[in-house]
Amino acid sequence: MHIKQNISLKPYNTFGIDATADYFVSVSSIDHLKKVLTLKDYPNKLILGGGSNMLLTKNQEALVIHLNIKGISIVSENEDFVIIKANAGENWHDFILWCLKYDFGGLENMSLIPGNVGTAPIQNIGAYGVELKDHFVSCEALSLKTGKIESFNNADCNFGYRNSIFKQEAKGQYIITSVTFKLTKRHHKLNINYGAIASQLEVTGIKTPTIQDVSKAVIAIRESKLPNPKDIGNSGSFFKNPVISKSQFNILAKNFKDIPSYPISDNEVKVPAGWLIEKAGFKGKRFGDYGVHNKQALVLVNYGHAKGEDILNLSKLIQKTVKRLFNISIEAEVNIL
Image (cartoon, rainbow, N blue to C red; front, side, top):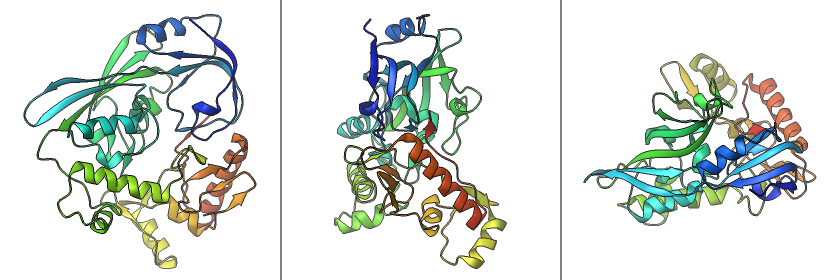
């Protein structure tokens, strides 16, 4: 077992923050993971997946365990559906491309979301009208208390908007090692009415789209709005879209005629956080080596050598300003470390 010392985490987080780990090890199997977790010489341990949903604000005085367990397999299938198990270390977008290669449908709207499969259930990731929970069967997770693998079905996970049991009562108690999905093999249900998917398909002249066409449309939309972490450090959407009461929305709509919303229930609507941030004047604002992206106000960016603390302070300023202008609290979607 090779444990490295004083390793830069810059290559392991999409924000590109140059924080240091006192100790670092990459694990490629559950047995390896279990052995590392029992090491008593390293009382502080931090699990690191794809590094896409985190902001490092300081050096990590811990043993950083990079979860690199790979593998995709078909559990069962019939004429209409296939059950697929993907291990935690698989890159999310690569996993979707694998599914599309075999014409397995359901996840195409979530193409190009950064991160790994293992962290996807924690956030209940979603995009363009589809969420992970819509196709989630179960996940396996290692209990840090017992050292045993436990299984969580859809109901067990208590999924909500960018939320799950793993962010609430079970936070910090489990490490997800694999996720199982149910996808379609034929009669695919396309979801093209959210966002700009339909218009993107129209631009490309596609009238009867396939799941592959939907994925390409989503990729084109995301690439037009969101910076590639390989070019500009970022974690995708930094904030959640807030859900407010219809009565509060109606009051806001009197002062802001163009405020958009999406119905959540009879009494609640979702307001795009990007719109609020843009209206607050932050879109495209740059503060030295960090700022807000000029095409998508939800995205905070590191232009090169920003510190995590700088980006955190900017996020707090945005939250404070949005609260003052709209009386709406917006929550960070990323984990602050």
